[in-house]
Image (cartoon, rainbow, N blue to C red):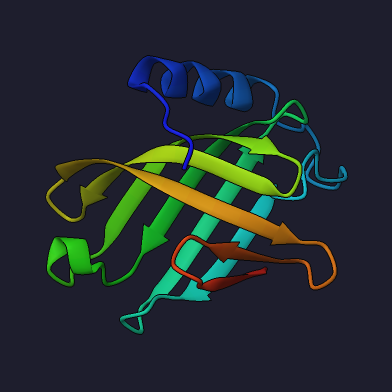
Length: 130
């Protein structure tokens, strides 16, 4: 798995936000760009929003309605990643909500399948574009 320092991740997040497409109808700049949904291994609903440049720097915002890491409470994961072809890796900060208890950063990985227009994450969970 690719590891990123927090300064690099923050810089990539800033670049991704600055270069996000201006029009909602514009074609995605990356096969990862967009909103995705899945069901976690614990049965909870998850949403992932990916935005950013066509240069590989992407912003990641991930919501889990019942995160095991948060004792079943909702969680928000936010950070940055770098895409290389059909592979995306990054680091996200995990925050339990409500309460805002930050648990720390974790690494994430996604593979894009152009044939099905789906993502598969490092846990083997399949994500569908919404």
